Length: 252
Image 1 (tube, helix red, strand yellow):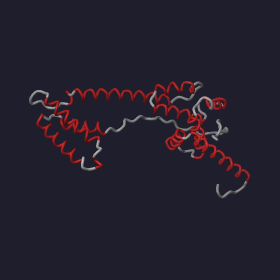
Image 2 (image 1 turned 90 degrees about the vertical axis):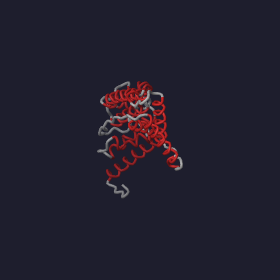
Image 3 (image 1 turned 90 degrees about the horizontal axis):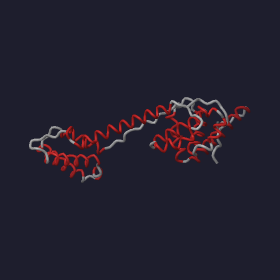
Image 4 (image 1 turned 45 degrees about the vertical axis):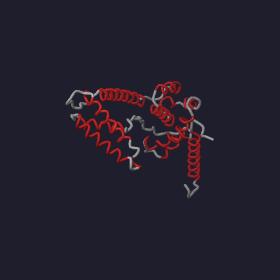
């Protein structure tokens, strides 16, 4: 049975905001292609052919070792040498490889620039999101915001609402708004908020990064997160009761 929302009214230290920074994943194949292009720059057809033979030899050697057999970067490097070798074979005699005149390279650079611009725009959007406090109706637009955004943005929106609900920020200062949230926000967000509300008094100096496990737990098992929050609430209440009554319990 999960803990009901809202929790009892107590003064809470506002939790520090967090901006989820999107990171470009490491791509071994792309790294391999870029290494080959740097090496090949200025080479003529003969030099590229020699480098290609060397890459083929390395690939044969790697295939004999199980831990190197599935090397994405090695395969990409070999494929890039083969592509550049064919490119020079079709070019004028004595031509040298120039990445600046390579249509494939230029298309990739254009795609990279567009992706970087998109990431920068998303970061600006996230920064704006973190600078605002929840207002009435935020829950109603949550689905539309997350529908148009990538998954990590949805995680950030849900985390923002959970932290605001736990710390009583924005319109969640109103107990009625906190009570209404139980019917407006999905169970993982409510479980996250309940857990944060109980963890914050235990670790007053903790920042959001130190409590990131609460979001993961709530997303993976909201009922378990709610049960944990309820347990912490009972434990804190029991400890307070014993302390108030002057009863010493060595377990506390």
